[in-house]
Image (cartoon, rainbow, N blue to C red):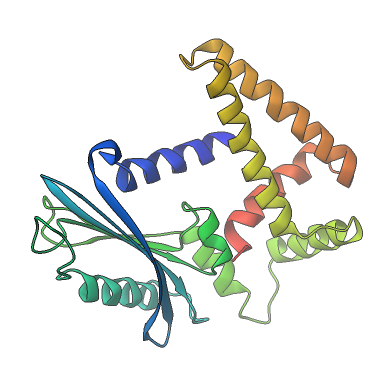
Length: 234
């Protein structure tokens, strides 16, 4: 569970924060609806002598979760911003990334996009990725037939509701605590190594044991909560 979060964070940081110590970065809060099925929330501009970068964070507002619809949305955002003249030393962005989420709350976890577009100087056309798990799960919620996963999801949500917490809120708590534990280990063991990883494992285990006692969960249910949250939480 924590390895997937680490990988997602590393991917995001490598795209969105490279050369941050040498760049001028500006974040703008944007509320902009160019289409009926998305809303641009935030735009981040950064520039170095060799690169001008735009990061666009948007929310998908439709209920049609297909690759065609999602591709249309991210391509529309890309086409709107690819020629923006907002940089001091570049006529337009040399790197553009578009991150599309299913809700404003989902943007808190930058890796939790449902569709992502990346355009670099080395690529002739934008590259688009999709979160197939989330697309599949949200699409199934639109039909009347309940799969085995959806039945199990309902049982887990009912169990957690009886304990006074929502599945998606619990998932947010888990991700935040896991990241906090990494930062605590970073501060104590800045050179990383075995002690760094051992501290993270110890802190995570203490946290998971506390969750299991508090919400009457076993290891299997805790794992399923994380899997379901990745797919179903907007």
